[in-house]
Image: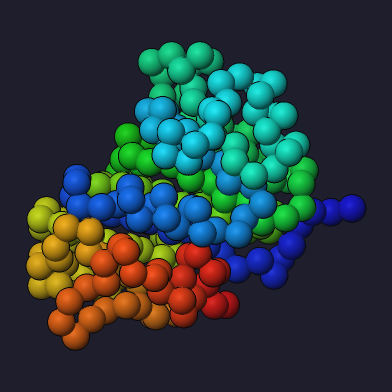
Length: 230
């Protein structure tokens, strides 16, 4: 029986902003709230296993066992690929895609520091495969990056939702402005405040005065947590 589901809505979410503004805190909240049956997290800094209170997988056997159980599959490459984050990411992206083709159900692939793995001039085939064809296997993508303009356009063009925190880099702000954000609102965000926009539907949480802060509920009208409207 095929595991392909062509009606699954595309959901590729990027959180961006300057360091220390709250990206990781919101990222954690969004992942926790996701109803995905499998939550694949690339944890090359060993941070998310602690945040989520989960034992990290460090070899193929533990990855396969965790995938068979479902739930959290947090991969720390420290044993398999010590000092080689790029190769570890390619391995894990390929592993996640192959597992997604095997099991039917909603999956989520997450990574931090995307700018370390994707540049303006290069994007790994393994990640592009997930972004271009993962939808049919109910595989969504969440990532954090300091600036969207710093990553390859083949990745940016697949993005369906953006959460932005405070930005000061003019190129990063210009890219967001081109995608429907207000430059002044971005520049005036406080710590832990963010703006959100669904690039496909135009839905957003843009305020009249103050931006939405992390402790409040995530946007419910087509958000990454509940699934975007088609």
